[in-house]
Image (cartoon, rainbow over all chains, first blue to last red; front, side, top):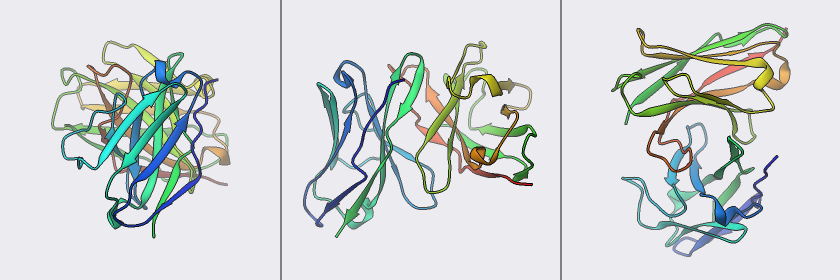
Amino acid sequence: SYELTQPPSVSVSPGQTASITCSGDKLGDKYACWYQQKPGQSPVLVIYEDFKRPSGIPERFSGSNSGNTATLTISGTQAMDEADYYCQAWDSNSVVFGGGTKLTVL
Amino acid sequence: QVQLQESGPGLIKPSQTLSLTCTVSGGSIRSSGYLWNWIRQPAGKGLEWIGRMFISGSINYNPALKSRVTMSVDTSKNQLSLKLNSVTAADTAVYYCASEPITARIPYFDSWGQGTLVTVSS
């Protein structure tokens, strides 16, 4: 079955740029999306179809996908961005999630 | 976007069948232009997709759960339902329903319910 691999944790200083990666075989040939989940809350879609932002998501969130890696980039990271982030793709008629990355804003 | 609200038993015993309902508001299941998904998350762990269905009856299930899962829709109540049989402690999780726009190039979930915790324990 298809697998998506994320780093368990990423740390960033306030105001700096955070990059969270998601790796999968030929992921760049598929589409990727990203969710943010804060403690005790439901996930929120922040990026879909590689780089598109849903309405209401700040411009500091951006996405890219090429080769075997999709990347979620948060520019000018704020304390409110501290959360778990999950990537997601579609393969063989199944939705696949990455294991999640805990973003810490130090 | 539609709003989603899950409901369920909270606690069930091993080997029983888990039954959950998701009530959709802000649009009709029949004509809202969405597919409907169930996703779960064990405490402290990641997301696991369970399955998706369209009002036409088209369904995809997670291969790992397919033998135990049934999804259905009650259009008269604007509700989705999930049944998972022969549950074990490994099925303990928060269960979410989520909407997937029909126009999506790949499934993605633009609206989620608040989730309902299901604990499997004797």
